[in-house]
Length: 204
Image (tube, rainbow, N blue to C red; front, top):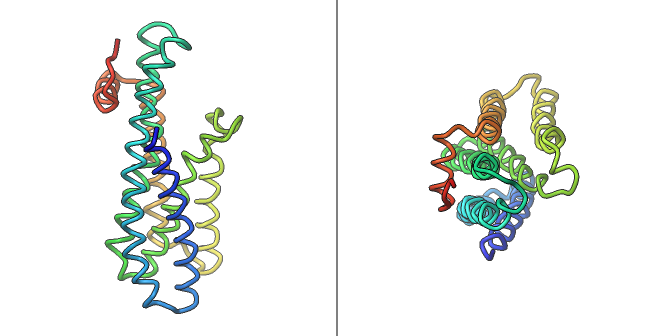
């Protein structure tokens, strides 16, 4: 679907801009950094919106065109619908972190770490699309978790303590990931109904 191309383009461009912004900040070209930052946040919003839309559209197509072929029975269809929680996880985490980075843009220490965590969670759906690794419930989470741990380790090494942004943000990301995985695996009835409504599909 076309929305997938929009998401790939906006997310990839946002990541490139993030690298440029980091270089500008390090080079003390703060005026240009701030000007580009306004465009960056707008691009981030587009990436977040397209991420939500992509998750809903792809889940809709998967349930309609593959669910009845690969699985049998209402439980299997419900499981496919409930899986919506997994792609939504990355979109929700990225959106929250981007919003936090925008709110605290006048505090460079918080702003920078929120942006780095936002970039890290963008790897969740990317890794999920890698053959072999993405199909493993265990290994698909390792790259993103490793990135977050590296961020924390660098912070500890440089500052001899962990910044409050990481103290709050990393456990929150892990908690959200755990909840979304639980919703996908357990497929509680209320979530299946909600996900079916969001994806515009029937449960049966």
